[in-house]
Amino acid sequence: MQIGRSAIQLGNDGLEIAFDEVFLPWPGQALLPKRMVGQVRLRPAFTVQYAVALDPSALHHWRPVMPSARVDVACRDFFGVHWLGHGYHDMNWGSRPLEADFVGWDWARGRADGGSTAILYDAALLDGQGRRLGLLFDSQGECQTFDPPERRLLNRGFWGVGGGIACADGSTPRVLRSLEDSPFYRRSLVETVLGQEEPITMMHETLDCCRLSKPLVRAMLPFRMPRRG
Picture 1 (cartoon, rainbow, N blue to C red):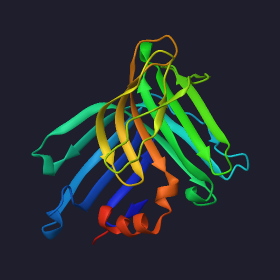
Picture 2 (picture 1 turned 180 degrees about the vertical axis):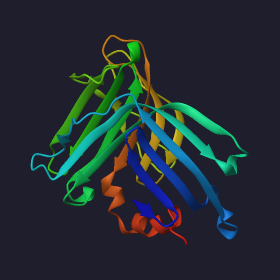
Picture 3 (picture 1 turned 30 degrees about the horizontal axis):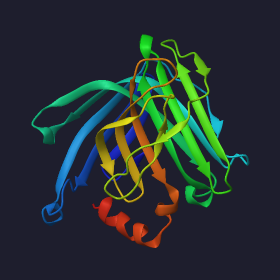
């Protein structure tokens, strides 16, 4: 798929994203926007066909396509520096807008003991129902499900988006680093405890669909995520 100068392609050895975008990293940059050009390569240890419906009517689905992968990021605008790390790729799809059915959700993914990958999904529906998932993928791609411990609230971000994460009794989750903080979405590194295991550091996101549907937030989106030729 290609959008403007950016493209994404799925090959036999993984996912490749070539980006060439105008970016606005801080206030005031809008007066002198720059281009950011580079590549992201995702090389999975395995891919999975596991997919679940997030609501009883199966209007919304989620699939953790590549639970465990190596990521290589290169960008000419960072003085030739590139990153190598551990990453992940999933996908959501549905037949209605998210805000038509969801209050919001929390998602988290982290590397557990023995090289396995733990994934949490906690979705709240507008009708009061919920969908809680706990998945553990081993290094060969075999999946086991588990019942996540009780959801515990996280401190709210700058825009008031809070969220929560499963955490064992007697433990308190900690936000180690805030990576994205917006009026309806938040992404952070969070330390929590699942079961009797040692603390695990997880990439965590909170989506507030009620806020996303508000006209004021909708009006902000073109400034937060501009699309320019």
